[in-house]
Length: 94
Image 1: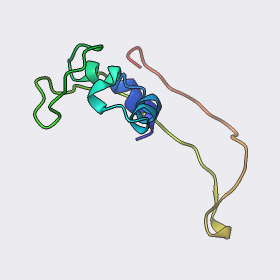
Image 2: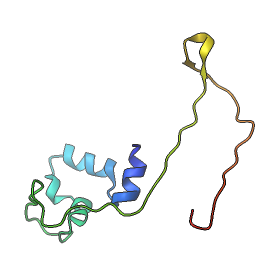
Image 3: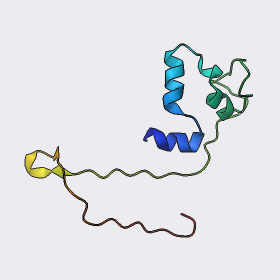
């Protein structure tokens, strides 16, 4: 899953969280993670990730697609090209 999909479902800014962890901030001190686990965002109490009081519950649904071009005559190497037609079909719920 691409990280924007995860971010949409969890409301966690993954690159920001990764940078904060790399800077030495404990996971339980990251605001987005605290909110995901139902904790007060600015509190600093540890979270029991093995047995949390509130299970994280992703919100919604998301679909991601990637369009790629490969040349089978060249061992399926990536190749450039143009999209000739692209049609998105939608319904009232999408």
